[in-house]
Image 1 (spheres, one colour):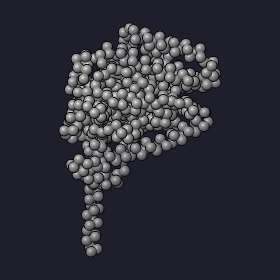
Image 2 (tube, helix red, strand yellow):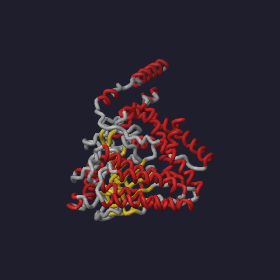
Image 3 (cartoon, helix red, strand yellow):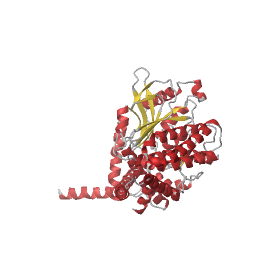
Image 4 (cartoon, one colour):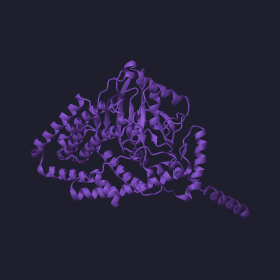
Length: 488
């Protein structure tokens, strides 16, 4: 009996050692074989952000009543610039855009000190987004100037708005629903969170996992969103189906309740503009696109595309669900393709299976001039978590640029490989295993390691932010969170 146990133990040790052999690392070969055609956007305005924080403190000390003349003057100037942009055509380098950006940022600390003016600021940001996107219809969306101008104004105005929201006192009631453009649509509709959603609408969201923050920020234009889904509304029953691609399951269709069960730190609704020529020719186009993707999802298993190859429909990541659906009807979304140029980030993403670095990032769809933002939802607490996640991720990406590698607990590799085999068997029967389909065991362990490191750093940042607020009496703005994280 003992002899048998010794033999079994010996065999298990040999199997463990065999399963411990690492996979070949061809990261350097993959990265060196991909041409870098762009470069990451950077604000490089740390001194300016510090000056805005100082202006916020001065505004708090001055009192809202004394700020009314300055506030009125700045809102009047911003409104006049928005009106001008709405009436004339400008190239993306036109001075009117930089003037508007400056005015928006100067207004932010004043409104932050006096949140009663927040709704006026949100309306201004919404009008800004509308007229600037209308201007961009005539721009080359792959040009440096067009991308920078759109990003600075659209992302910048959202960033400023959220800094104001986070400075509001606990007693101040903030409506999480922020309306955008009520773009006309004749497709079937139903309600989600109090908003009439139409078949063919696009839901862009931000998940709560550490890797969601990596997807949102891991881009030449760091963004706010990590996931995209397509809405189908049955014209007979008005039942809603959400079509999306999950890392764990590939393409799925789910109910609104199931969609909302997954953590959503923010949600944005995009809708194709009704005055596009394709929409004029066929106003039902968005519904047909959603119906086509629904049929594809129902007729065959479509796995998740870890490579992020936007030209291959055999596997689809979340953005491709939308782009392929509309491509069939001659609407090419992501008029400006996303680029991932940072060598450190490329190195990390390659460890997760990414092979294509000119692709379609969820955050970048907002800048497509063919789409309007119909509405957004964001509340105070999830917004705060979003900013913590972003700050931690931003500093971790700086570490990646300095050469930090994505590690994993090597001694768990045999266990992960056994779980991968188990997951493969479950996948054959249409079930979900502990290791996602298309992800190898090493990548799964690296994902676990990354998530633990992110969570540990986030806990430290939350404590540092709490201490900062106790001492200073206000929330640390985003740039301060990044500095805190660097110190940690």
